[in-house]
Length: 329
Length: 300
Image (cartoon, rainbow over all chains, first blue to last red; front, side):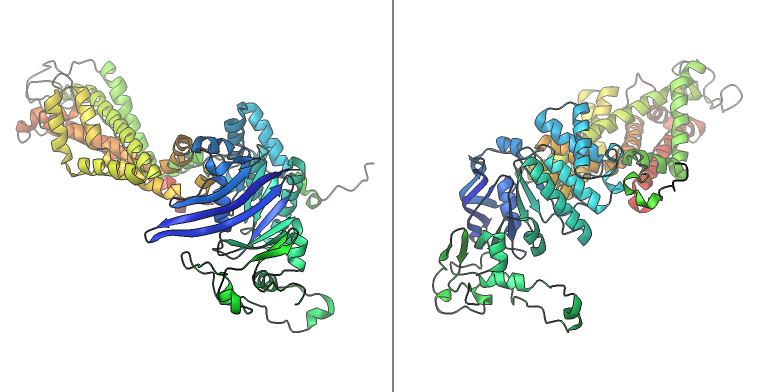
């Protein structure tokens, strides 16, 4: 099966007064139909920028300086605005972080779902409405025939995120980008939303790019993980490998910073201090060619401060580090 | 069979009674407006004025240009509002003149809104050079004294009702443009606009269907006040003698009779009161809409 999304050496830069600052550097990954890749990393690592670059929605001043973004073989990075607009919401769509604000308050949810169908697929008002009801049913909203006439303010956060998913998937896109789709929701609803995404994915065969810092979600529903740090992909591979045998010190740090629930006898013991990664992500324009993580890394020594880290790895598991922590640790 | 215990309602969450009433934001605003005494007083007053100007002239069949009696007849049983310096019936003048005054007010307000919304939305949505250019044009119109500018236009193109209406519209759109631009700048950054773009909406769709409906509340309020201001404008121009001499209007009645105001108060007070009540009623409606749109006053 060929890849739905194939990103090769994507570089995004920001035009600033002192010059051009790289935001994403040489990012490469691909997703096949029905598969999910997670982009993880701290805030400011370039996860959302990657999503916006794919959608062709980079803010003013940002531009794709190199590389290609192939959606089913078509390089969307080079498409003119009009052609790109045809793709958005149709062959690729996006779910936003904040379900409370990502729905237009003056239209009913039914209108908003139907609108994409009418715009992209030329359906009549009546057919679009029926499809919208079917979509609401598919995202497990009770009484969809009546909810379709509800305005966003009449729905709860979880409901609204379901509506967002229904909107994003109404045209059966080949690619879905979910930018932290559950951050604003409470934990039980998060699990429901992830279940729903997985079900819808099996149904439609959509490839999903999931942007998240929720590592439990990563373990749950993704097939591959790409760890971003300061605009570069520092480790990439199958989810199980990354989570069980992380090699990059940063990935190890991320995983170690997740609190674990201990049950039974272990719960009685005093809890250990949660590990942390000291320091901050270097700001834009303060990133040299060397490993961006070196200043925060406990293993940094010798070559880390002299040359960019080589990308090494076996098979699909790639890591960019001078001191991969593999089996030794 | 009939002994089967009824299923407790708590166990059937799927069949929960969801009463989704289509409460559109517009209808909700209307409901709040109707409950608001200020707005309703204004609406009733304006409704009465509208009815009088619409049907008054048919019921009170006196030509406002005809000499109906002796000049300066004070208000009495025959001439309810008295007669002016030529002996014309002032009540007839007010009933007929209201048509011109209100029409000029409404049409000028529509022109104001059309120019203002177009300039403001383009400027706020696209930003950059277009924004700078359009805002410079707006500033150019803003620094000109509006009444003087309107008078220049009317003097240049002749004092007909059309040119007066157009002149008022052309000089008073700047406020609406700035208001619309500010709303567009605010709403443009909201998530649902980004979501619409991500769903494939183009510029014109985003402007007209996504942002504008959300920017409307303050614009509707501004529209109500624009009508009131346009009526005052028309009155002011007619008072200065720049009205259409062939069409009776409230402003013209005041203008033509202004020299006799001290001897016969009714010649200016009656049409003046008409203007006052019309503008007041529209302002009250504007306040009412403003309150109805105020989210803090919504009980939810």
